[in-house]
Length: 71
Image 1 (tube, rainbow, N blue to C red):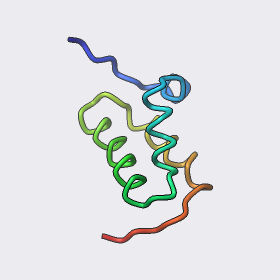
Image 2 (image 1 turned 90 degrees about the horizontal axis):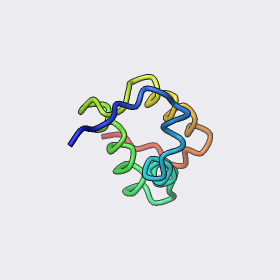
Image 3 (image 1 turned 30 degrees about the vertical axis):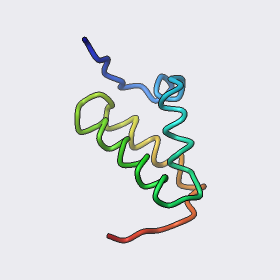
């Protein structure tokens, strides 16, 4: 099974699974939000998602940040 490498933010925003992940990153529940954002980071770590689209994704979600968690 071959996994596609996503290095384009517009493609990232078109895939239904990644759109759902983006919605979960903006969730009001901090556990859901942090877990979904960690999922995006994991996609970058495994080489499925490029760094630039991931950074664009996180920058795009900044206006909706509700919680700041420090670990």
